[in-house]
Length: 213
Image (cartoon, rainbow, N blue to C red; front, side, top):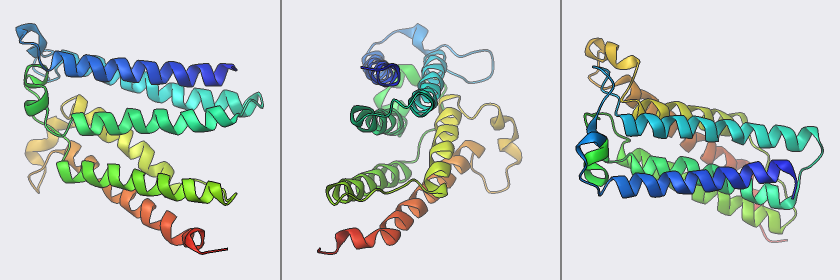
């Protein structure tokens, strides 16, 4: 097993431990878990989660870079890398739909959450695109990532980071935002729109995959 694959597996283990930790803490009645940093509104547990999320996102770039640089791209790596990506993004998206419901003691003063319909669209889009890639792979067709797919990933990371940080630092401007939504919410809607657009483009551009030989 080469180094990039080991990094990917380590990322998966970290993500799983993070998810388990969040859900365990969500059922613990511990007052200290509601602590926030100063008047920022940033919950300490979500801050730690955000740091883990950013580190995991960084290792996603690192293992891909090392695999290409050292010519260590393997089928196992190709399989595990998207699994780790989807596990990282979608698990947090689902968890952050309603922090007050699933993590009442972790959320603390958290007021920004991930819109439920946006989360459904993001997860459904990934399921459709992954199914498309699976069918294409069976027919020896490679579906390359497009610019919208890459933009979607970047915007998802920004949106999740902002929700975990309760909109920091942009929430200082929320009171002057003309349409009455948090700036963090804007990024959630934006990443959802770009994700949906990229999914539609993937399906339209690769619709020949569904044709019979």
